[in-house]
Image 1: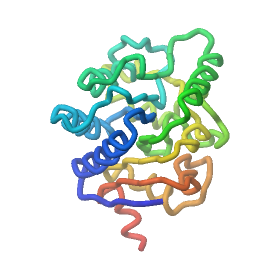
Image 2: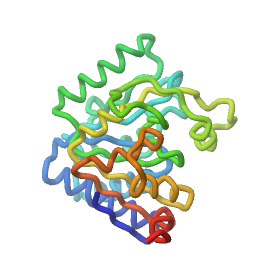
Image 3: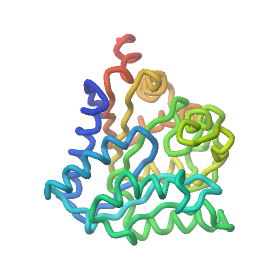
Image 4: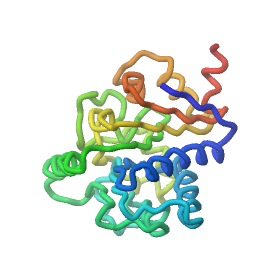
Length: 245
């Protein structure tokens, strides 16, 4: 695992943007795996800056998002589909037909999971996967004790995840309790993974991911087994590792 320790969130976002842009410049039709939540917002702003400066085009790029809440339609203000439109897609030249996000409202959820997996494979797999990490060590919405061999699937969200995500909703009771998510196996099949972590509240999870036992109890720990992972982490999120050297 390649670890880049940076000063703060801003530098973390810039480093990640350089990696993404470099990948697209070398392969314009790259398949990107994208994350949501507060962590990648800075990265997406940097990508918009590169695009607005004429340094990169996303016209051939294909994206697959990690997850979507069950029960929220794509036009719901709190859906991850809307998050991606507001924070990236509406501001760059990516083709909407190339933006893939699992449906949170389809009746046959099992079929949707299978369809999403087949579509990823049909595009040759994910070239570069962006990840954040939850305080409980989840990646995507793969909560502790989710099996490593899981592909795209329906997950029940942990209380910690529901609590953390409540800040994005007007009322805590409005937070969905389940989601459709790429599985650990799907994520691990990506050719390159970049995980971003910022803030002291992520320090325990980062320590477990890097130094801990590989266990489904801390899903991100499986990344120790991937041959091409870059962790971009600010000093606060890396503090537990620094203190244990």
